[in-house]
Length: 188
Image 1 (cartoon, rainbow, N blue to C red):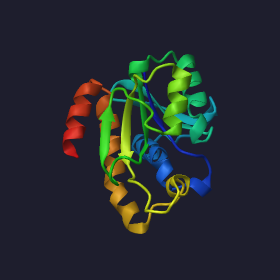
Image 2: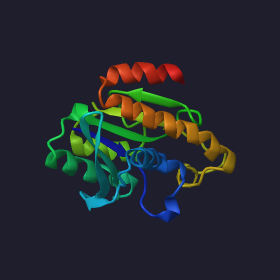
Image 3: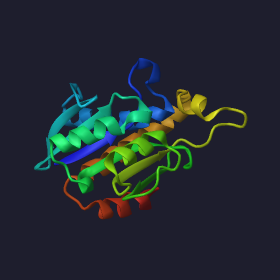
Image 4: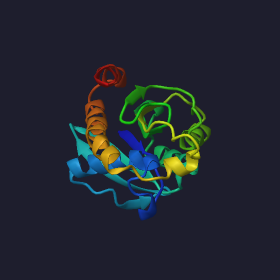
């Protein structure tokens, strides 16, 4: 069983914000599978999906970004999911808008949702997809920027990125993550 987690903040006020791009990928995967993410447990909402002969869980933590690990660890324990079967999707200020990077491990890089995940799991060795949102304009504070909504042009630019991330997640169901990483990092 695989667990795919999109990081974000709950509530309509945060919809389509830069910090919620992980939620957007989960919603795309849910739409593709025909299984809405609506089971409420583990401090999050999730869906159990059968695809490609495998089971996968799609999770959106409802703990707010800075406490994401409080949702991820309990669901992993309940379903006995090994760390190599976890994939976390989140925004990254250090990548240009729309650029993606898949990694098997790494530090939090200043991302509070990943800091929480590492703290609760006791390791930084888990699969991840980082989605570039770029740095804020000069003079704008980081929290204001990440919690701000994408501009119309940026949002249009993000649509194929969301699709590509969902494609990578689906490929991972029956392919080792290292191969998915090599394929999708080469694309962009």
